[in-house]
Length: 617
Image (cartoon, rainbow, N blue to C red; front, side, top):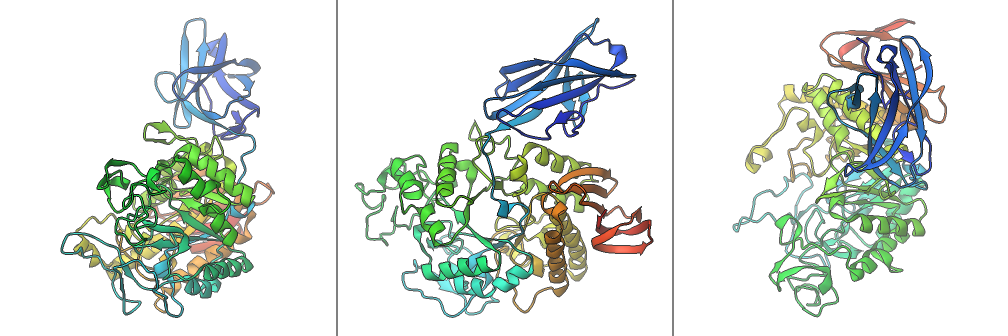
């Protein structure tokens, strides 16, 4: 029995692919078996709340036995997230046509998603298809001595770069995160040639503002760099020297909360008693919500060292966004090229859009990324559907769905079908300009080191995590998996992101063991060479930097897909990944990058069971 055919990911059925812009025509086609004797068909477009927004009749376009092709064309004039399905009437019945995967179903299923974005939404060209390198500033590189004048106390400085991070709680059971190694701006600047050797075009720095902790997400003074990192002049030098190497600098924007030990809250009295906690008449008093002044207040996830701010408070908005020398203006003028928004889900859409417009006023090609762990196109946070893309708020997000898909595939929890569905779902749901800038990561400061994660989840005690190291056999297996994982990362749409030291073979469980110092002089040279080759491959191929994607294999431990350049359709790359346990004979071509190729003839190459290859065709 023939099925009714419709596939939203195929241009033969829906054009354009993925999202549409306000006022842009969208054409839908479906193929209905002739024996249905269809009388009427319509596309019903609904708002996200289920309310019907538009009903568009389909017209019979052509009959080519055994199918009739029915088509419609419509435009949407309001940006937003919509969903659609079809209603079909025959002489005998009327039924809904719904989605099941890439196929259709008359009985049950989901609605198709359609995002309509504002017509003027753009993303910076320099961020499309970029290679990102993420640095945790205290732990990457140190040059010279640190100026500790003004450093928030108490703190400790490790005697050597190789010492283990402090993970033991205090006698009171507190984890202070106040141990430092002295990584600084001059150290990062000296290592820029190394960073550039990986093909890097974006340097993303975890927080750099004056703070108490080593992670610096507890902001003490937004406009002052932490003295251990260096001066404003040191930061200006870093940005200037990075730009000479074609590298843009992106900073962490931590605007959902501040530190309790800060200029704005000043619970410890460190800043002269003018903060909201210390003085009920403080100019920062309205930034915070006190339940019972001063000791009971709203804090981030219950951590009393991170008092939450009222994001839409006018004084806070002026300080962070609107003023001539606001926080974002301050750092952009010193040389930053954009921001990554920490916990974007906890920032109102109105705040993000206001910030986006302001940074674009100051620097027209500034980048705004967001920390979102799920599909950001349809994210619901705190009972509100987020408008990250439809209103043009974010240029990019941290692409954790791709990370999860890669881990599941390489840890043999998925044979390939899940990988394909995750990738195609994100590519379809995200605006193409956003997709090109997405931060495709394998590891970050919030995840275990990728080399460790590839061998499975480890949830032991902190003492057990501190002692956790891969055996020689485990490490050899993890390295093979990492080569394949990073290859996938570099051949998928978006911007591959390397967390400092992953390319050098660092291991480690969750925080703080994923934040150890970079192993200068002890790098895994084999992995480092591999990552440099990946960087060269990526930068040499327009199809990999900006091309679309189409799968032709995703099952039995094998992945195959085509990347085709948007700018030059004749430039195509075919990607094959094999972890099936068996060899795979595939058509040969010009090898851009390959691993574990057994034999190759003019027509065929043999890809071994732990092999992968990118072929220019």
